[in-house]
Image (cartoon, rainbow, N blue to C red; front, side, top):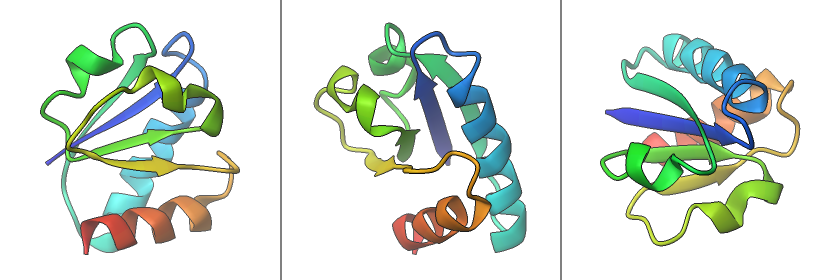
Length: 90
């Protein structure tokens, strides 16, 4: 399984989402490759992803995808991310 996190530069919000996703996966007892990327590379990096984690401001950069796109409202809310990831992977 592959999860991609995105933000404008690929080093801020996406890095926080990556760490949070890894924590959520651990809590859920699941394994996945988690990759942080930026909006200019998201289509290439996420072409084989099952899940894309993003904030609302970067939705337009994703384009057409077969991945479940999860919009995170508060990137520091671990419970929100875990709950949304659990729902997407159920």
